[in-house]
Length: 534
Image (cartoon, rainbow, N blue to C red; front, side, top):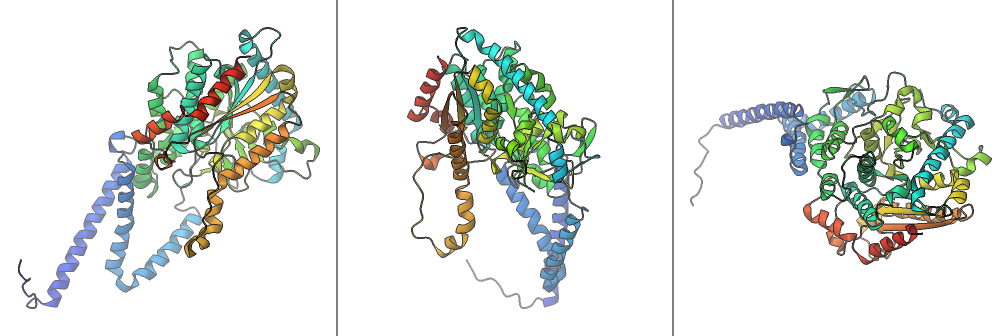
């Protein structure tokens, strides 16, 4: 090692020229890199180019730093002022729609938007429409009764099963799917035959959708082994890498590529990539529309599946199903007090009939139900003014409220024709009963954040309390036994809990699959076998 030689003999102007030349070269390289990223946007659908999510984050940071460096070089001391001015200009451009891309529900007609106001919401649900949908539901229940009749003596009544699947990313998907496999296996394939209604949020409903389609294929005569490990691998395949990569190379700039569904044109963004990747992972067996499943639900070949994303503008629930179910758009008690209670749901068939709602792609319904904030784009609906739909878990992370309304709507038929009601919950996100977590010595920062952070921390508890309250009310109108079985993903070691994302590591997959064998879940499986045996 030796001291660096003196540079005093260089002229300051020469040094500044060299530095400026380096800055120009760096700016040129940044522009070339930006062009390469734009080119990668054309390759976003090819799995080979979909880099890991961590690398996409680094790429995102590079994209954000590049303009900062360029403006700092050119504007010097005016750089901060320029950033503030650009921010306000960009804000105005987005506000007035010049550069504002809005994700849409694929397959729906946005050229003739439905008016979204209180009068239109109330007009969409008429007594005649509700009576017709109720009649369709009764016919489905009668078909289901004939379907399960061979399991019982003519004088016996069958138990009726509803499934609630919680949100929670791919861990909830894998947990719900594996629970269905085990439940069917333990009951000699009687479990899903007795299932009538499925509801829930995000990840759990992804797993339920896949299992239901495999079950449908088997019922139609295809060679399907529902316990095949291959299907477990499919439902747990990565989706996050494709979504995050698309956000960086496409959505962050502007999605310029287009595609067509049902004769309508849309832009390819991370919502499109989510649907395509989930389709690829599951072998495209769910590449259908909601309408394609309607006859199979009506004749009870498969249970009804209700997706219920939340409209964030007013908190209402958007009800997406193959079978029209307008009676779920309002509280059961509203019929007697219409002036005091709101219609809190928007039916796809009744409200968006003219916007081609019935032909909504099934994968789009799955995505709309799984729109986790920021990871996935909010969906703008074909309304005037446009309203946004987001993850179903925002309002009901377990789907119990829609199940409760379904039971109430058909309570007379259920009380007369079934022996009991069994609600099976696949809880892949939170443990229902746990010790209260109290911070006895909060820091100053924690005290400042508590009003907001505590709301998110106990959000799941709010849903549980509301669910328990509704369960208590059910005893006043349900004369048959109501049995609740909550199967929970609770790893033996809390620090090994799988993350809530669209990516699972091998260790996380093993943690989820092994939890079904713990003592509590095993006891509930035994209870399920007993309830279905008589």
